[in-house]
Image (cartoon, rainbow, N blue to C red):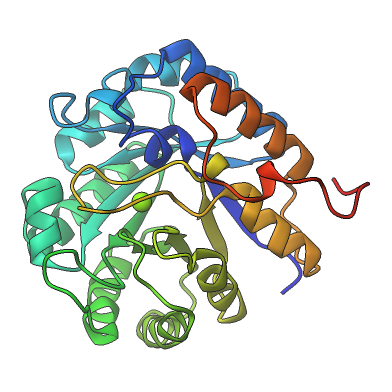
Length: 299
Ligand code: MG
């Protein structure tokens, strides 16, 4: 593997757990800066109930603000109502989410695992009718905050049902940051056996310090795309203890130094991190943005 695609998730997963409401103009600027750094696919907002996730209440305004931005813009949706809101904006792609476990499904979207799969299949149909791209993330694929371990066979079975509905990819989400590299290998093999040929994206959180190792395991097992969040911002309001997504700069450092290209500039992402830290009024958790560049002339 000499290259891999990065999906920047900081404007959505990065911000959704932040108590401090970020101004719409700052979200728009964040997206513009990420794209200027080389990001070509980016989650810009989620279309969920603003009473449950107040940070995302301005989803439509953010989309309007980035209408001219040249990247694939993703809107996260959990149900048909959210999908219709997203389809009324200029987003290029809908991201649906199912839960691998009933416990998280009920907490996150008020739906059992099976009900969330039915919702995602309906969302995929709506996107197709409207000529938009669409994909699905299987959340809590590596562990549930309420139910514990999730078996690869269970995730593979869900992936098979989703693949039949024609998403452009299926993502495996470590929503609460419990996965370990050996588990990634087993999961990737089980899912790929169930849905041969379907591109797989992986979404890792660094809650327990395993995210970069997990990303590397996923890459070596054939993942086509990795999610990452500038600064390591992120969490989930409905997953107790979930902390930041894998930091884009930490991931880029590991990938670029290993000869895997992403098309995203590490130096530019570090600058965005520093800008974002000033907006959030605190240093962000990413490691690579806190130290000197190595080698000194790296980009
Ligand atoms: Mg997440």
